[in-house]
Length: 394
Ligand SMILES: Cc1cc2nc3c(=O)[nH]c(=O)nc-3n(C[C@H](O)[C@H](O)[C@H](O)COP(=O)(O)O)c2cc1C
Image (tube, rainbow, N blue to C red; front, side, top):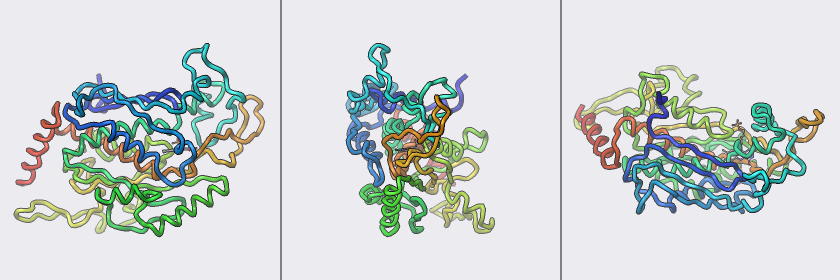
């Protein structure tokens, strides 16, 4: 029997950080989604952006190819397959060779696992003698494939009226000032700012904090927010734990590397607020129907979307690979040693926001298909519009 989350829209990725390519397949996409390689490449470029990224982002390209499921710019309803070639592959083809006879072992081998990474537990769990076989798949490079599939889910959502924006709220201990929620029209300004932050004063302080961390051989985490506009009421449900939309969002966001906390709307702050100021009162007006003058719920109640903008925040831990390596133990000698050094970012919160958009796009696209069904975008649109007309009359 299929699990609930396997029965509808789903995707899988494959590939290692320094392997020949990343691969992604999507199953359950309806026909008629407008998709172009250009659009997916533009999303991949947004993931590479952001002050604080390491040298890899500068020399590496995301060479994307769509291999199946799309014809003349429209999805066919068949599985969609994409590949993101690794332009650095020639440098890695021996260390990451598929065939045993083509491979060479690294010199020296990676036997000093990095604290905060998958290295040690992965080696113990899978029985590997060093960290290479672990870190290659555990690397956040895999999120390039998630952003590529996210571009497809956004293209599915666009004709349904849903747009997704993300922005950076905190880097280290620097916080952007509270402001109105960013709109889709703000996206261009967000994407052209160095840290994808709308508060330029705070952004300068964030850049300074990143530079200070860089000089100290340290790293910084932070907080980003994803906002989805145009989400209809009633996606998700209260009837089962795994069908609650807030639970699905938390899982999707939490699955992003280095994310350690998720909030829906005001999240933890609401726990400190009295009930009289924590909820959105309901009003009704002739001709306008139901409305709520506040947006405190973050767009969900009881596992369902309410129709208000959906707001999800995520806390990203400081990156684990430090230029000034943390102490660890060599797994062969059992002696204390500095952890292996890998090329690393100082801060990747802006990129994580773009990955967060892809995660939210997946959950919303799946929920739209669950509620409105249809084998084509036109059928999905018809069902959505009929439902919106119906609830508009109440
Ligand atoms: C976009 C992005 C880029 C990242 N870049 C790095 C990096 O350069 N160096 C690093 O140590 N960790 C980086 N990470 C975080 C690690 O992948 C993550 O901390 C590690 O896999 C451990 O995962 P976990 O703490 O979520 O369990 C990045 C994460 C994301 C989302």
